[in-house]
Image (cartoon, rainbow, N blue to C red; front, top):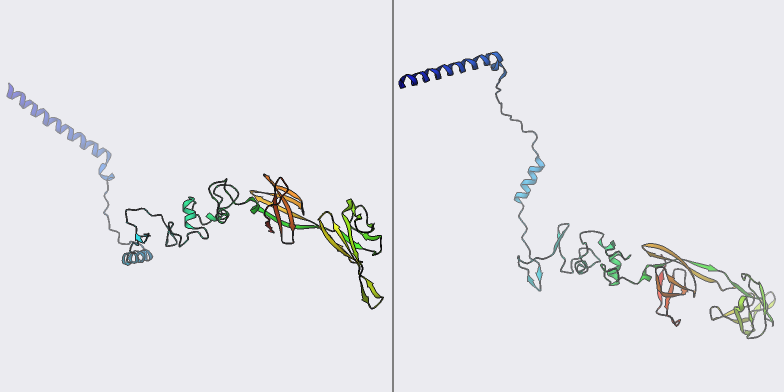
Length: 319
């Protein structure tokens, strides 16, 4: 019985395989699978396009160019070992050692100034930057020997004060008569145009601006009238605290000058200050200054203390 059972299993297996093969053949024929599968013969492509001559030449040049030998930086007359770090900067194929003063990477700023203050030496305009935002550029801080990274330390604020223009207010004085009482004309005086003053000590002018000191009689030859009166009257200008010599019939312009100033720190502030006038710089009220001199191209100021004493004169350039 056992042999018969094995025989039946073999027969059933053969029948199953035959049925499976027949089914597959029928499906293949019904889908026409043979006509849908195509093979294509691959033909090697021989055209590689245009040869990049410049790239090839560059590669050849790089291959044959000898390498540059490493030159160790020197410290205290000794080469620095390779295991020690050194701050080197490559700029236009030149190496700059920021621990040496020469060559300078951003002249006129020194390498030590850049390095010690941590300034961005990579920027070509590092000298024009204001690293601590105090209104002074790194170059101005360098020239003033102050810190470019500490806003509390900066050059004098008067460095930001410039003269824009000199303003003049005419005040003409003319001696019209050399006989006492002396007649003096002041055509620019707002109160009176003519004054009379007697001997020494007498005053004239608005608010008694002038005081007579002395009269010196003088004459010079004149081909038309024989001789001409050129007497000199010396008077004291009580506003300016100086003496003025008036020559008869000669106009003497004792102009009152003012300076038009600009304070350029982040924003521009305008000031007009008369000569000998007091003023304070906007935003810096702790110090009072006096305008002691006004010229065509510059002015001079000086700090004034509580007692009215003047400090060292400071030149204010026109610009």
